[in-house]
Amino acid sequence: RMGSAQATIGIVEFSDYQCPYCRGFHDQIFPRLKKEYVDTGIAQFIHKDLPLKSIHPQALAAALAADCAGAQQRFWPMHEALYANNGRLAPELYPQLGRELGLDEAKFTACLGDASREHVIMRDVVEARGLGITGTPSFVIGKIQGDVLTVARLAKGAPSFKDFAQEIEKLRKTMDSDATPQTK
Image 1 (spheres, helix red, strand yellow):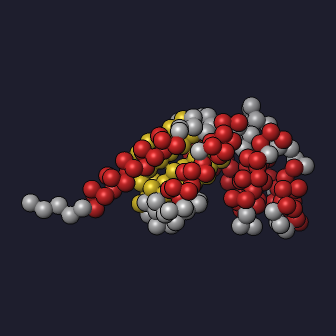
Image 2 (cartoon, one colour; image 1 turned 180 degrees about the vertical axis):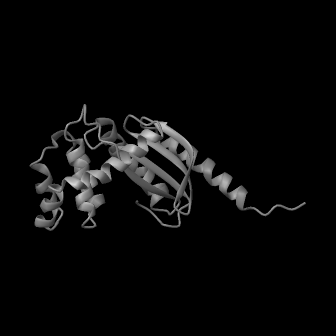
Image 3 (tube, helix red, strand yellow; image 1 turned 120 degrees about the horizontal axis):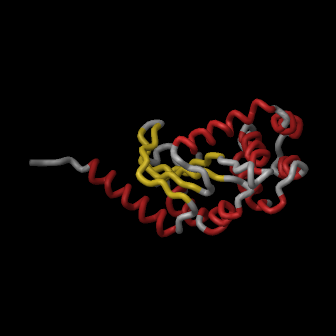
């Protein structure tokens, strides 16, 4: 998760590190979304993995690299590094990125080699399938209440910044009206 724990709007992305459309979202739309909604405390951005192994053979290994970097509190820097290297993902790249990010090399290598770590990624895949999501990038936008996200919109493909902004502003208005005391 990225953003304030007090944010009441959640943007969940189901993504594949080898997907060129996912990289396009992260290069072109995400920076503005982060600046205007995540950094300001309005929304949380939540990453979920959906490696499309049949067409992207390095997607699962890349997701594992991000997860293993996350075990050392470096998920987001690895996330960005993987998208920056989207066209050249390969087993020898992950340790190199780990070194560049200052990860404990022995721990990172052991984590990458731990087959049981795949269950973390597969939980996201099962969640995506339950929502009817089979392609990347896909997004779920909704209200956060405690640990629950109430879905307001499901978007398959990469919406424009304007689409995200409209949905977020619509949610903000409904939440403001819900909080307004009613008088008779």
